Image (cartoon, rainbow, N blue to C red; front, side, top):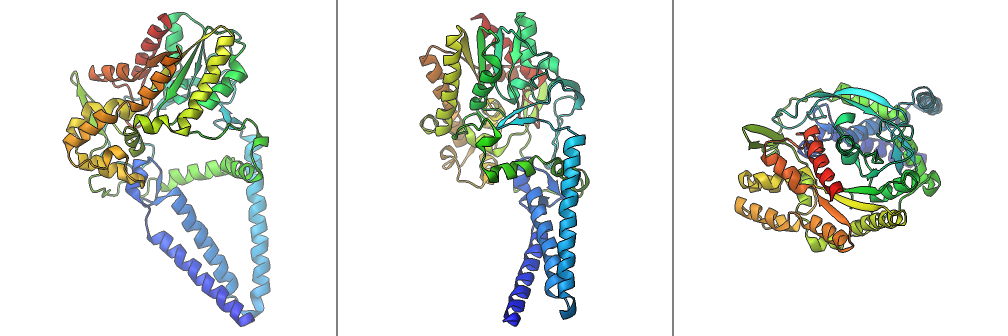
Length: 472
């Protein structure tokens, strides 16, 4: 019996060792990782792939150490492995606890699924519009000019100079409304306040969705006396949620609590940061063979003697081909509109009006302007990197003319559904698509090259449009 167990253990060890070798030999899908703007280590591995290879290698080494031990040393080696494992667990837990207590520099404070910035934060940095991963597109084009930006939060952890007790206008939204990648004075919230003379209070936070907008309004906005609430809906991901929002830790099951504990552990955050810093630059300039899938990116747009460059992810292009019927039946849209309806009802009881602003993706604004100059085969090949079936609108696209026709057919279907829903209920609906597109036609770079958000110029376009909406 012992001989059989020994044989099986050695067979399993050989299998684990073989898997570890395969994990190191086989590279990740580099082209797909670049399209998703994910970090690549040693020029060939995604972070999850790298971790799997390391874990398998460690497990293989331990198994070899134990299984192939001389008969007289098996017990000794088991005790040694148990002791070192205990030491490693205690050491890592102690370091993590120390980091949580002594270096509380987390980017967010979590309350259930809600997240806020740390209160009274004051942070200044120079923003550079370039790819974050060191290994990226085959050709790196110039982005929006670098500039210094300052970001402050109030005592509630919201992006305002101070926490207001009374406000004229409340803003609900995600990173586009919070002002990702732009300084305090350049967000459309601050520009709107300066131009209108009204007290504008920004409740938005990066990563929020309509259910979180409602929760933020309940938590902070109901008693501020605002006469206008602006809800900014981002078509990129505001219509994905289909499950209820969890408001507290008690709403999570044990597995989710453990997962979140490790997910946001400061020791893990710092470890992955070091990996990116140390292993990200290695072979970062190695050739990228994409078969044309990446060679057209970032694409150029010329207007008024200016050339701007734009990178878009494949999932944003795929989103362009969502039909009105498909979107209207989607549970994510139903969940989002129910949350906004709840904000509208609460505002009405306070005698306030709601304005719904529609925030388009960069792909939605810019691709129709250049689609006639794109190679349909490259675009289709790029979207296929998602690994899913092609959107219905792209399945029969074979040439450039068919691509342009498909974009014209589907572009704007999601916005039409949203706009009709709120207009039919007497709610002011403001589309930001055409103002941003018109500015681009005039040579204004409204979106960053390598980031999905608005530039300071884009924020100014939005502020001017919202100022007109307030006047109406």
